[in-house]
Picture 1: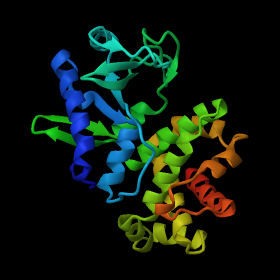
Picture 2 (picture 1 turned 180 degrees about the horizontal axis):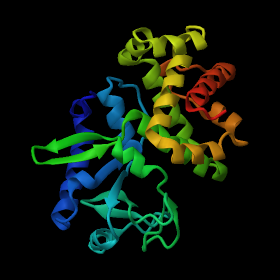
Picture 3 (picture 1 turned 45 degrees about the vertical axis):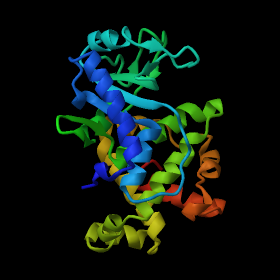
Length: 280
């Protein structure tokens, strides 16, 4: 099990500070209903996995809330100051930190869609419920823990984010997906899984003992298992799209990561992930 408390203390302190403020303001919001998503989630996973090469910087925090109804969300946001310079309508100042507050769960209508009052239009929270169900616990103090997506869960959210945002010229999700593929390809546990089981051996043989492609295939399998049939069918209906070649071009990492720079090689890795996901 990944030890999230081994992450960068600065990142953990930021999350702890914001969650404490939220719980103090609205005690009916249980910390266990909060799921960390976005760049800080990525950074905590990156650090907990033992990697220290630099990632894309951010100055905000993204928190998702599993809500039974709109009451707690409305109570919380009514006590906060909206960030007027943010276009998404869900960003508020919490303890001096810009925080995106994203409700999901029973407030979705239809599934995967919410319309927060402050936003005024629908926003996607696709697969948040599935990712939350498969998430890990992050203990912030002896009495407080929140949820953090598993690595396949984080990857699932990034796949959807790419499909949602690439059409508008936002390509940052591709680099985040490349980061997850890198984590899988450089995981001792993943290597053990490939070499010590019949299923892992079959994946290795399918990809001619190519470790990075085999890792991408297993990542795809894990995402598919986490999503379940309904969400998987929804993803298949959107994939592949006309931006697949663009995804491969944008699937880049800093030079410190020693990630493939060759387009053909990155295409092979994406194809292996698609194979594991049964998208093609």
